[in-house]
Length: 527
Ligand code: HEM
Image 1 (spheres, rainbow, N blue to C red):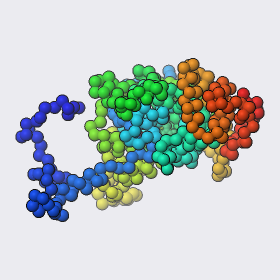
Image 2 (image 1 turned 90 degrees about the vertical axis):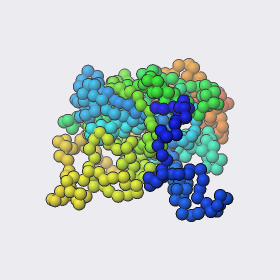
Image 3 (image 1 turned 120 degrees about the horizontal axis):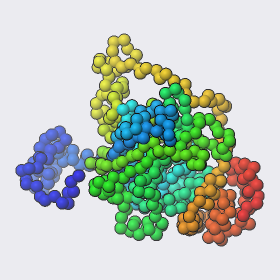
C-alpha cells in the first residue's frame, strides 16, 4: 500500500489526466464556468454540477448498530477434524472437509453503539463478523467478542439498543437509561457481568475473542444434525483495558484499534485466530438447567469441549474504506450447505433484520458489489433491475428467458439434496411465551466467581459508577439482581451504592419476571 505522505511530487507528465465520470477531460478543476471572472455562474456547468452533486450524496446511512468498524482480508484454513474424528462425520460443509483447505475471508471488527467516527475505547461489545467466500457461495458468521447477549428474543432488540444509544433529547449515552431498561431485564445479567468487567474494553481488535453467540446446526451427508456454537480464539491472547487505560488512549486517539490492526497487517505481523466448535445432539436437552437455544447462556466447556476446526489468518488491508467497509454486508441467513439455523428465537429475527437493513442502507442490489458477491461460486439468478443494477447474473443459454420453469432455456433447479428433511420434528401451539428454562442468574454468578480478584474489583467499580447515575428504584433493583447472581457481588455493588440486602428483600415482583422454585427461594432469603 502506498503511503501518500512519503511520496515525492510526481513529474507532471507522468500522472493520469483527471476526467469527469463521463470520461471528459477536466481542463480546469479550480474555477467554475462563469460569465466573466467575478460571476455569475452558468447552469449548464456540467463538470461543476456533477462534482458537487456527487459530493452531496457521498454518505450512505451508517449502520444502525456497529457503525464503526475495521475490515481486512485473509484466509481460513481447515483442520478437517473435530477432535479426533473427521469433521465430515458432523458437517458436509466443504470448507471444513479437507485438512489444509483454504477459503478466502473478509473480516469486520466493530464497536456497537457509537457512530462511525466514535471512539474505539468504549465499553461496548465488539462485533466479530467473518465472510467466507466458499466454492458453495458465501457463509457469514456474524458474532461478538462476548459469548452471550443481553436478550434472548429478537422482539426486544430495538428496546435494548434504544436504551444503550444516546438519549433522544440530550443525545448523550445515559447510564440512567441503560440501567432502567436492564433492571427490568433479568436475562441481561450474564451479559452485564461480562460487559462491565475488563472484557468490556478489549485492548485491541487483535486481542479479542469472537463468539457466534447464537446456536447453529451442522448437517452431515446423511442428514444428521447437531447443535453447534462457534468460538474464535486470538493467537496472541486476550488483553483488555481498564477504564483508566481506555481514557488515556482516548485522550489522543479515537481509532487505536483500527490503527493497530492496519499497522500489524502492513508490517506482516498477520493477526490470527483459531476457530473452535462446541457441539451437542440436536434435541431439547432436558437434563441441562438452561436451554441450548438461549443466547444468554454459555455451554459449559467441561461437558461440551470447544474443538479446533481451523485457523484464520488476516493478511491484507482494504484499498478503499467506503467500498469495502461501509458497503460490506453480513447476515446470519448467509449459510452454505452443511450449516443450518437452529430455532433460537434471536437468530430468526437477526436473519430478517440484516438483509432488510442492507437493502435500505446500501441498496437493493448490494449483493452485486464486489465485496459482497459470492466471488468463488457461480451466481446464476433471474433477479434483474432495481436501482444501480451493475449487470445481470448468468441467466443460462437464452437471455430472453429470465424466468423459471421454461422449456425453451434459462436456468433449472439444482438436484434435490438427498436428505432434505433434517433435525427433530417440531410441534406446538402458536403462542407468545418465554422459554421454560430461563435460569437468568446462575451463569452470571459463576462468571463472577471465576474472575480473578482484580477483575472482580474492576467489575464492581464499573457497575457502581454506572448504576450510581440511575434513580434509586433502579439502583435497588440492580442490587437485587446481583444478589440473585451471587451474594458477594450483590453485597459489594450494594456497599458501593449504600444499599443493603434488607433494603431490597421486599421489592415488588418484576412484571416480566418468571422465577423458578430455586430462584423464589433465593429471593426470599436474599443476602
Ligand atoms: C450489525 C440487527 C443481535 C452481531 C447489525 C445490524 C443490524 C443488526 C440491523 C446492522 C447491519 C448492517 O447495517 O449491515 C440485529 C438484531 C439482533 C442482533 C435484530 C437481535 C435480534 C446481534 C447479536 C450479535 C450481533 C446477538 C452477536 C452475536 C452483529 C455484528 C454486526 C451487527 C457483528 C456488524 C456487522 C458488520 O460488521 O457489518 N445487527 N443484531 N448482532 N450485528 Fe446484530
